[in-house]
Length: 272
Image 1: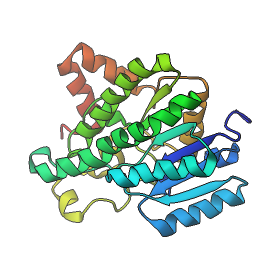
Image 2 (image 1 turned 30 degrees about the vertical axis):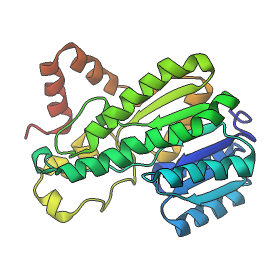
Image 3 (image 1 turned 135 degrees about the horizontal axis):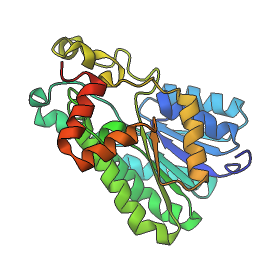
């Protein structure tokens, strides 16, 4: 993979921290031209400086991906700066905690807007350029977008939508040369500390307060996952599930809803 991404232009949303930062760093190490987008201008500039120290050409564009006009401006800046676009990684998003009946319509709307509609906005804006380059589209989903768990509030419905939308794109666009990849990771290390209010967390079972809502898997190293994601693109894989054993749950849930629910309770402790 040493030269595969060299001089390709990549755009990463949510690129100033967490997994998005790890993706941007990996792309920079592989010689890509990296455009990073997030809401915080200062954090973005610090990351852009870091990427440049790694030898990459980097552009920081403060962007709220829930705003259509800002999304369009972001893509225009990226293409204007580097002459095209080869890779879009829709990574911006936010997890949630909460009892589903206590989650308000407004909270569902906010989660839908950030976690799903931002993917739609970004994809529509970038698609003409990605089709021109016969490039790559990566949507960051979640294990919760394949099999919902308790106590995750408005998060699973939005991530289920990302999974379905990505499959639709793959079926419709692959013949036109656009490669589409869905990444469904479990909890990523360093991604959730202090994110949720004490008031919400105090109303949840102990198991739900742990990373990933209590899912019984080891937290994923973001740097490793970033490299694995880029390799999946290079190999033209269509879906990356981490950990792989989660596929057993997905298959079981399709075969039997009762068996699927039992496995979710067993692996997350949500039955207690």
